[in-house]
Image 1 (spheres, rainbow, N blue to C red):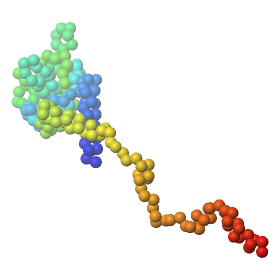
Image 2 (image 1 turned 120 degrees about the vertical axis):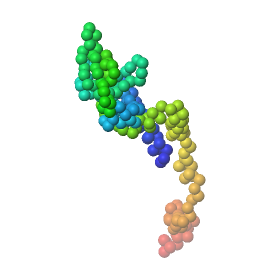
Image 3 (image 1 turned 180 degrees about the vertical axis):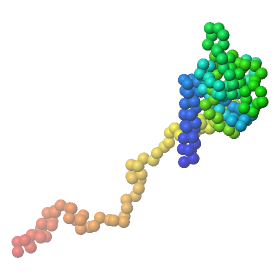
Length: 200
């Protein structure tokens, strides 16, 4: 029973991972982790958020978006202004500010696409981050391999026909002698013994 539960759990985790990979590839969804509290209390430190990659033209003031930076980690703040950039490129200039910060970010960002926050869950960043540790990935892979091998390993089953042949015949209900005698054919000697009665 415990093995079945473990197999079902691993199967569900695998299915979720597959669906997440498909969603990331087709619809641009991914997960980001918050290590600071610059978006508190809306998104406190230690939260995880589901984000979707969208063109900058779909961003509005008040959206919480993640912007990639070349010289630092991505930053996730609330959009305060957005204006089209000059030139033929489809880029926009946005300014942002963290909900817990007193001032806007030092410099505006010129972007063609951003990752917009869909929803967030507090307190799950650390467990999710631990899933990327090599030793844990190796342990989960080993456990999954053992469980799958055990589930599909061929097993010897007892043959029911041999079980019947090996069982001794039950003596609890012996066949009646009268029924055995009635089943025997009548021989010539019996005709001789009863012949006188018939002729009389």
